[in-house]
Amino acid sequence: MVFNGICGKALLKVMVFSDICEKKPLKGQYRVLRGRVNSVGFLLDERLIPYLELAGFESVALIRTFDLRYDLIFALVERWRSETHIFHLPYRECTITLEDIALQLGLPIDRNMVTGISLISRPATFCYELLGRSPSEGKFTSLRFSWLKANFEHLPSTANEWEVMQATRAYIMHLIGGVLMPDANGSVVHLMYLPLLSNLHNTRSYSWGSALLAMLYRELCRTTDPSTMDIGKCLILL
Image (tube, rainbow, N blue to C red; front, side, top):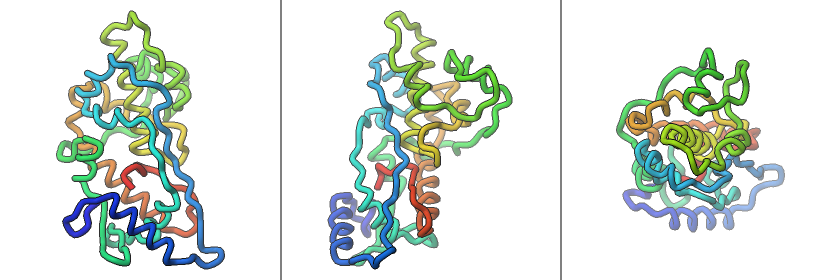
């Protein structure tokens, strides 16, 4: 985050914690936000690393676990201003920038816009082509994390290059839906991201960092509604 040109997440936490201590919420005002984050529940196979590097996801793939303080996240949400996309703290203002994403997650921030089709007419055929298997023969729009883990946690020792690439796509799908851009469900990833992984060399040509930041801003704006009880997207940036 940027504090008038000074970068420092530790400073932010001290300031927010101080703000929590100084202000006692009125009865009925305090709410506990539920986070929708689902880290990849299995170890990264070393054979996937070259392809993750090719796709531009090598840095974010190193994230194993994270300790989120939802009391501090709640305090930040209370200070978020949707009009300016800035946290207004008692001492100064700050926000999350593309530079934060590039430095902390290593994702591209100045490439092509992340866009594509949101509805795939033959999802099973598409999954067989890019993942080598499909969760269903019928219509579906998302992949469950439990299915991804069950099918890609253990890569056979005899796996060929194409099978390793399929496992890499599955791993990136879990990263996108579980860590970078979790949706309201929290246990699935939308199938619309899979076409962007068809050619892993072209995957890094998309500005994933910009898409992530835009979705996080939108989520923070949504969460300012007092009736909202959950929060998603890339919470590790907070």
